[in-house]
Length: 117
Image (cartoon, rainbow, N blue to C red):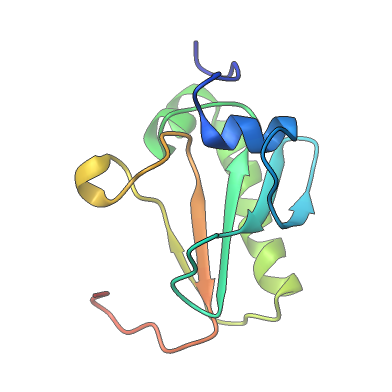
C-alpha cells in the first residue's frame, strides 16, 4: 500500500534506521542522505519517509509530501552551498531507477552540461 513501509525497500530500511546512511538533513516527512555512488562532488538523495514507488505516484498520491521533498531539495542545496545544481527524478528501470521508492538526486559541484551523459 502506498505510504506504508515496504520490507524489501532499501530506502524504507534507511528511514527505519536498519541500514546506515550519511544523513545530511531530516524533517518530519523527509530524509536527505549522501549517495553511496556519487556522480558529482555533491550528490544527495532526498526522499519522502513514506513509501511511494516513483515521483509520479508520489505527486498523484501525496502532493503535499511531493512539495516537502522539493522544499528540502532547496534546503540541501543551500546547506551544501550549491547555488547551481541539477535535480533528477529517475522513473522506471529503463530511466535508471534502481530503488523503487521516490527520490530526488541533488547534484552539484562540477559542470553539469546538457544533455547529460
